[in-house]
Length: 364
Image 1: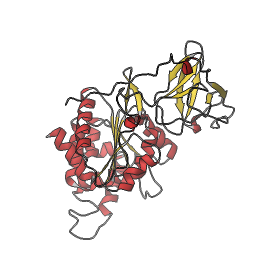
Image 2 (image 1 turned 60 degrees about the horizontal axis):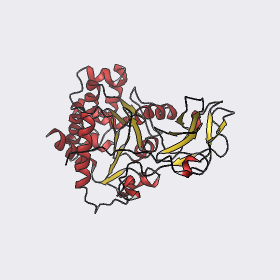
Image 3 (image 1 turned 135 degrees about the horizontal axis):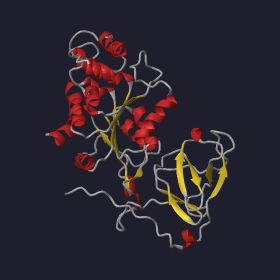
Image 4 (image 1 turned 120 degrees about the horizontal axis):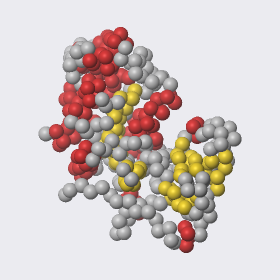
């Protein structure tokens, strides 16, 4: 069956309760980073705000954010921002109801056909190791083919397991080189593991995990080499790195965002150690992402899932943002929905097997 992007339809604003709804209440920010009381916090679903008699849809909406409105006649618009990014003079939407009675309306049926049930927009929940994921794989393959053919923006969150296995890191490399990936988020050590394998042919200092004891010598030699060259880009261009997804990202101009953690002992030159700076850089990509796949990195997954819209506007069309979370632990994949990202499709499987399956399906 040929993949078709779900079509979005707006509410019927001629309904009495929406037609007669009041304009939304706005209150100005008095101090940078401090919201007025009774602010309206956004959800994962599409929300509309009535400004000067017009219903305005918030795009790039995401959890735990506030709505800043422009009520200039003829320029009615809304911008979704984090509390820390509020500026003095911003006009924040006030109201805690979402039924139109305060000029705020949450619309959960935008992607549903008339015959579908309400919870379809949330895809499926409660996934476990007993779940059959073959349909999810097939849908994902079609989504990724559609994204490539239509200039979509696919972001991957990559955990260290993918960098430690030869076949999975080469599968990821092929996906990047064949145009299926537009951005990657990972930690310092995930990137360094991949570079270590590309330079020394080892993981944790070993050619295979059956020989010798683990050692970090090659790992830190790799990071030191990158710091010596000034960047991972320069290191990859030096010819020392023979393969891997980091080399592919450099050669295909795919950005890699590496957020530092309190556990980092030594960072690559591009590691962003300021948490807000890292969040801002990740959000630049998350806000324009059309499909996001989160693999074997629970903390990055939760952080990224919560800053990624569940729907967005692309080329003038409102469409869903496809989210997939992959992990061998049921706890890890279900944690994202527990934190409010209800639209993520979770798959309980080894991420190394997962990426190899995707590579085989798309690249042959």
